[in-house]
Length: 328
Image 1 (spheres, one colour):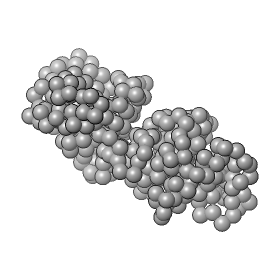
Image 2: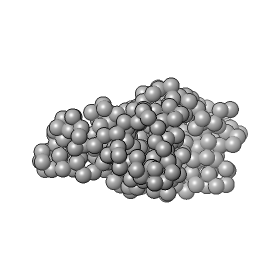
Image 3: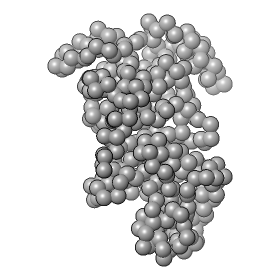
């Protein structure tokens, strides 16, 4: 079985998307840029002064290859168009044209996000040097939510040793979703799974109960979210509420949820809150030896993915490839 990241890198190379990396004062970004460019995984745009970026690379013994595009807002012929578009997006929050221009001039995250919004780049990867909150604020304010999404959320792709690729959501962004938000997370996670793995998603809405085996307001929330998700995507394979064993183990599914088209064969797992999701993906990673890729941000109109500030340069490469596939 091909490793999921190997498959993603292969398809990213074929797609030849334009990915913008704004954190060019971080050497990990430059190391990743070399790999991405030499392997032709994407067409790269680096935010900043070309001479300064290359000097930083040379200082660390790196040689940036030809073919990378370098841009600064102050030199960008589209600067007026971008600042006007940003002003229009945020005018209802008191944004002025001058403030919009200054933000894009001084904050590479917002500038990069507006390049994606305007179609000058297909996606953005950031977070090595900025917090998740900073990255998400730029993404939401500049790119916004896609039609049908009520919230920005995240998933982790879990490459397991024996059970293929599983998708876990949300494990990193939304602490305690209401039913409408949980439904949106389910729909978006299914679409993310299909776009990145090529597999038909089978979505399990997880709970500590299976099909009414217990009664609690938290179970009611999951059941309501299930119905809302079905209304959003009537053809999606989704079921709940399901305990993890009923969702994952076929023998258990026959006893706890007979007749379910999802129970026992789910590949997308929607956790009821971030506590369960974060704990669940880390247990799977540490005890089952799964490789976790993420958090992958979903729900945006166009892709802008986050990184851990403790990421490696190879994590940036992988995130860029994921972002490329999400732009299709």
